[in-house]
Each structure stands twice: as C-alpha cells, then as structure tokens.
Length: 225
Image 1 (cartoon, rainbow, N blue to C red):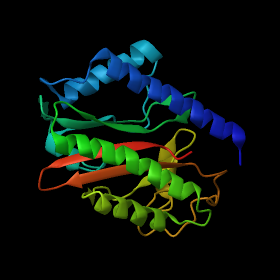
Image 2: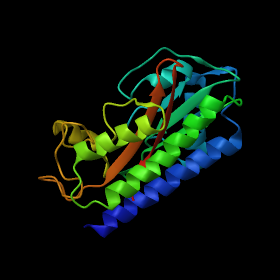
Image 3: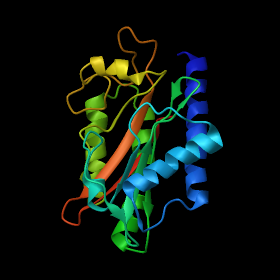
Image 4: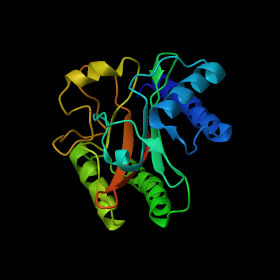
C-alpha cells in the first residue's frame, strides 16, 4: 500500500472536518434560509477561512423531504425550518487530494430526527469496523450489510450505493469503471484488493437511511480507516 497517498487522504479529510467544525461553530446552520443560500454561505466560508475553491463533486445541502434523495438527484430548493432535519455532503480538494464528508444536523427537538441522526453515525462505525475486520469482503456484501443496519434500526437504506473509491483528483476518471468503483449491490470486487490500472483502493463508506412515510433522511460519510 502506498502509505504516502493514504497520509495525503487523511490530511485532506482532517482539513475537511475542520471545515465542518467551522460551519457548526459559525452558526450557519439555522432556520429561515433556503438550501441554496446555506450552500453559498458554506462555499464562502470554505474559501475565506481555508482557501478552498475547488470541490470534486457538487456541494449538497438537503433539508426536509429532500433528504430522501440520493446524490445524483437535483431536487427543488427548499426552505430550512425550525423543525428541519438536513445534511451536508461536501467534497473539498486539498493539494489535489479529495475528501468526502457527510453529516446530518437537526434543528428543533423532533425525536425521529434526533434518532435518525444518531443511527446514521452509529451505523457508519459499525459498517466501517465490519469492512476493516473482513479482509475478503466484497462491495456487494458490504452494501447488503448496510441495508441490514438500516432495517435493524427501523429505517430503509436510501442510496443506490454505500460508498465509493476516493483518491487523487480527478476522481471522475473512476466513473469510467462501471460499478467497480462503488460499494454497489452488483459489485463482487473484494474491497481490500486493488483495481486493475489503479495504484490502490481507498474507500469512502456512506450511510443514508430514510423513512419515506415521514419524509426524512439522514446521512453520514467519510474515509473508511
């Protein structure tokens, strides 16, 4: 394994976590603004405080029923209310290395929202530990494990994938490899093995739980180390 690359990815993630800390500390997350307004404020903060002006994927801010939608969708712009659940999914680039962090936030004291926020975080660590402790695990097996975690906690798994490869920018080149670059139910690749023509694999695990009746979703994502 190329340790220097892993170190760079860890450094990028640490800086991305610093961005999330600044977002939380600054009080940017509040009711009475649209998702797009918050998204623009996040961009301005990232640029002014950390010099970030490049993200490898679209910045996602989703609130209310928009939290049901997976990454590829582009739902209408909603207003964040004083009883909103919302999540941020950001992929800043540092020194040409990608980070990818997702976090859920709750405004108000709705018990379902608070449980969902807790469950996605707790389940991420369970999934991460399952991945690390099983050297022969395939992408499909990890995906189905994440589905079971959702079900065991009273939710439905909301994503078409449960994670993806991450590395040196641009990540988009991996999109040319159908399903093999994703923790996907049809991918039988062993996650601890390198892909052909790639130096190594480092995986992001993403947990997206939803309740389609209550129209809420929660999300937690980061590097699986």
